[in-house]
Image (tube, rainbow, N blue to C red):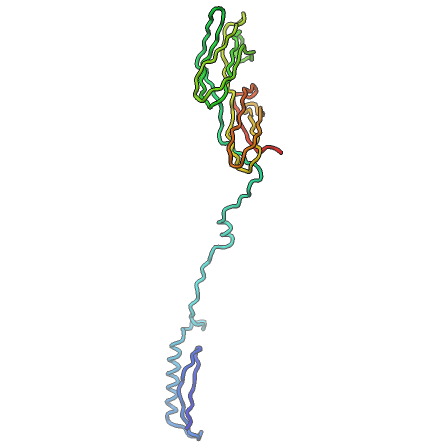
Length: 250
């Protein structure tokens, strides 16, 4: 009798399907051959139950990894801060303006022994700076008509300071009175250089007339703040003025 072992491969799993016995005579068949077929069918059913279930399309339900979408290249570029190029010249910024602001508090005239003394009390309501004081004679004409002053002086006033300026003068025969004119003689601006070290130009400009009256050019270090001052009265400046700043021309 020969015993043969049948191997079945299902889904990549090697299993034993059963065994058959036979004598040397191939014509003789034992009664247990009928039982072996039943055993094979039972084994196959058991093996199929161990395999992954198939979908209607015939493909086994095999778990797959879930894809997580990350940021796109465009998203990453948009999220980046803009890169600013380093300046290759001064980048001046006007930080604040300064100016003296005189206020005429009172005037006085004293005549002693043929000598006339004219005085004016002035207070500076602005920043530290110069104040111009002028004594002019009143001849009865329009006060807006420019006249030659009888005396004048430019004096430094601290912020908030009050003091009296006096002049000795002889009024002309046609004078019907006198008056004092006070005017700021200091204007300026603090300028910060946000660029590289270099020369910066500041211009004093008349807003009323639309022209430049004066300019200053000075070296300002990188990150430093400097004061640009204009110390004069500037007859052509007018009541409204401004200061502009820019890198100095080469």
